[in-house]
Each structure stands twice: as structure tokens, then as C-alpha cells.
Image (tube, rainbow, N blue to C red):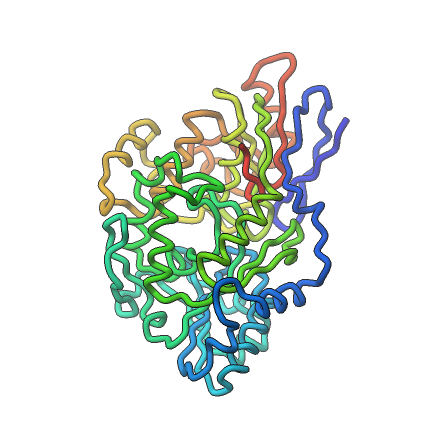
Length: 424
């Protein structure tokens, strides 16, 4: 028997597998990578050796208004490690700089004060100016032009009023943008809802290049990069994290060149070969990424890449914050025929995209290939309305999966962290 631990919320779920059924455990080699320096040293070193730009302390000279775009509560970015060094460097260049930390919520709910304190620490929350972006706060938005895709690019005007715009973030595989980090701080991070909707249209989501680990020819990435450059995002500090959400690599500098260096590093560690199986088990890497069903779709795409047609995906996500979006829930729950819903999505034009449609579209794509058993703290009725089978333990989920596959011997592939790997 082989025991495997799967991140779940702030804990783990364990299960003993029959090794004759277990085809493989797909993990990135990130956990085998040991950095030579600590988290702070890695961030400082990257800022001292930026890619494609001057140091932040040089860029901030004579810059009165400085805006730092920071991640929100749904991202495990170690802001307590990154932001203090960014603040120090900015003030090294201009001690009198008027600095605002702009929280990049995208279309997520606003970050609470408690979440800000947990993310940044009491000192920064108490002493620094922090503004939480709201994609529907129209008076705070301003257009900067037309995206390559044709959508109107509208972003938070705090970015446009800044003499220097910089950002923090982390790089991980992303299920339709290729990778997180870099340009995503601007789009969707601090963009208006209409801009996010245009960028996340059904046409782009269905594009074969809009997949994990792909940047070249990815239309979603192309829009995002254009927006970041048009907004004059001058400097980024991005990190790569291990399972414990600790920094193992940091890169700073130009929004495109530094980000590319970071994605190259990550790709060297997290590409894994597909092991097609009847049952594939995945997670969202635990807290904070598995707080709701909406986010958990990301981890499902890793399983989608290796589950057999007609197979079963078991998704473990605590979902203590609920479904994650009213639009997402309604799009899936109000129509019993998911093929009909998919057809409706694909018929919509680029500027007719509905909120959360992209996530619903991807989940339906997965459901059309496989059955999904969803292990969470959610009530059964909600999970069933989303066309998935509810379970509350891995043991229960495995029992249900065996009945669905209905074979004497099944094959199983385990993906302990579905958002940390690129399944090829």
C-alpha cells in the first residue's frame, strides 16, 4: 500500500492506495529544489539584479506618486516578505514618495481588513496607504485604449496617476493564461469588469493555446501583456513558491523579460508526463487557493489533462468560502443540460461575455469528458446543482469512483497539487 497526502484547506487528507492500481504520482520537482538562500535574501538579490531595468531605487528617484500593485486574499503571495523590501527600495530612491498599495482583486470580492493584516502584517496595514480595487467602481476607472483583441481596456486610475507603477506577484502554472504573475497584476488585477470579460471571452477560452504553460500565441496572454505595458508597469517582483508557500526563487525587473525568466525557471521544475487513468485525484494545493469551488476549477484542469475519457476526477478543495461567485453558480445550476449551456457560451461575442463565464465554460469542458466527485465542506445540494457528485472524505470519494468505473481493477493517477504542475 502507498500512502499519499493531499493538501486540503490548512490540513491534509491521506489515503492508502493499492500500488498495483496506482499508475503514478504527478508532482513538480519544486519540492526537491533547495535554494541556497533564505526568502528575504532571494527577494533582495533579485531586486539588486533586475532583468531589463534599472534598480527600483533608481526608478523611484524624483517619482512623487508610486503605486505598488499587490495580490489579494485569494493568492498565497508572501507579501510580508516582498513588500517591505519594495517599500525600502522606493524610499531609498525618494524618501518622500507618496506610496499607495493597490490590492489587485480582479473581479473577486474585496479583501477584508483582517485578510490584509494576515497578508501584510499589522505594521504595513497601520502605516501604509492601501486601496482595495473594485472592478465595478466606475468613477475609479479610466480607459487606456483598445486591446489587441478589440476590447476596451479600462483600468484603475490610480495606476495612471502614478509617476511610477510597480507590482509584486507569484508565478505558477495558470489554466488559461499560461502562467500567473507579471502582466496579470494589471489585467485582470486592477481592470474594470468590462475589460476582464472581453479578455476572458468564450472564443479565447476555447483557443487551444489558452492552456497551462503556454504563452506563445496565447490570445489571453497577449491582451494582458499589452495592458501592462500600456499602463507603464515599470518593475515587477515575482516569486516561485514551494508547497509550504515559501519563496524558493525570485525575479525582478521588466514586466515581460523578468516574467519570462521566472516562467522558464518554473517550467524546468513543474512539467510532468501524463499518466492516463480511470480515476485522477487532484487538489488546489490547499489554503488559500482551495477556499471556493470557483478557484478549484484550476486544479481540475490538471486532472483533465490525464484522465481517460469517461473517467472520474476526484477534486479535493475545502471550499470554506463557498461557491465563489453567484454568476458562476447560476450559469451552471439553472440549466440541467450542460451541452446547451456550452453552446450558449460559444455563441456569445467577445463583448457579450458574462461574469464568471470562463470558469463555467472550463468546468463544463471538464464535465463533458469525465465525472467529477467533489470533496469539500460544502453541502451536497450545492455540489449536485453544479453537476458534480458530493463527497466529504477521500475514502467516500474513492468508493463512489469505483462504482462509477465499475471494473474489478481500476487505474489511478494522483496529483497532490494540481495548480503546481503542467501535465503534458
